[in-house]
Length: 209
Image 1 (tube, rainbow, N blue to C red):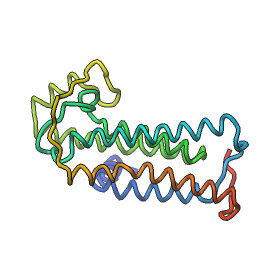
Image 2 (image 1 turned 135 degrees about the vertical axis):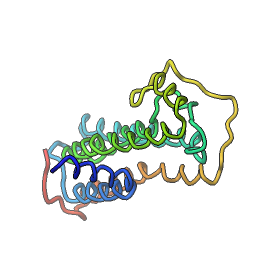
Image 3 (image 1 turned 45 degrees about the vertical axis):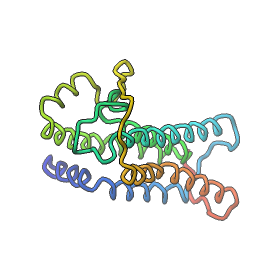
Image 4 (image 1 turned 60 degrees about the vertical axis):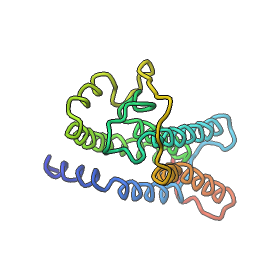
């Protein structure tokens, strides 16, 4: 595949990332639907994986809601540098990555876990690049200064800065908050599938180590 073709594919994902993410999630769901793992159920490690998955999903859901408190309705109006945006430039995607790990644990499926991490690491850096180019165009030197003091992916907690009051646009925020819940809904679907496997209602066709 040529570099031009790869670039076009990345651009397609950037422009249609929500639908592409839904397609990928559907493929992962189908994979989990008919596959199972080889390790024993109800062991310490089995329960640890489940609880880690749940913990990461909770962190992701609350973290994304925290981000939307600041960004809902202001995405292209101002350069947000408060709250989570004072710690890292792309907190929504950082929390989404944590959620991807959580869902990977929740699948209890090694293949699905690896696929989810790889796909995130392949596609979402391009999304971040595209969005930061737009912010550079919109805010110029202010964004350059923001880049110098705020890391892209790994939060710097020494930078934390916030305000006493912040105006929220309720309609936009509530819509964004509901969209943030999809990690939790997906987790619940995975738990339902696991229970249906245990009940023998959905057959396990392939066992993955």
